[in-house]
Length: 175
Image (tube, rainbow, N blue to C red; front, top):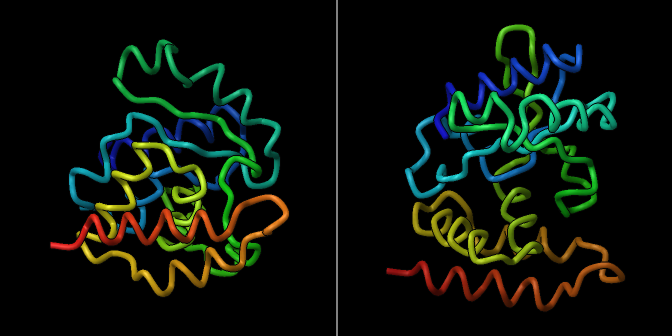
């Protein structure tokens, strides 16, 4: 996905939901913070987002411009209407969000380390690729990442396992 495509999805989501602010939580949130992110970080075809004020309207997004929609078939990318529970991040992640403006629409994006935490928690092969690339391009720092992971709710997430997973990705990214 390119930044212009992410902006297109954001504008389309605004038109569909009649909302102006969206939380963008998936890997392609990187495009707002780093518009010219390395190619290996922007391989996803979807923008994961939800309306900040009305998260339930994410279903409207999925139905109109989600996977296998005519929007997806026409443009080759789509939105994934998600919810606030989708990405597991430190409890204070919202204090570090960054705002990006696309006309009258606002994209609310997690800071890159918080985004990386969510990928470490998910732990899928594609998340490993993403986190390794963040390390390889020196876009995240292991110590900051580990501090953020340590803030996770140990009752819901195995903090030590997530931290070990992050350390392995860092080691794999080393030259």
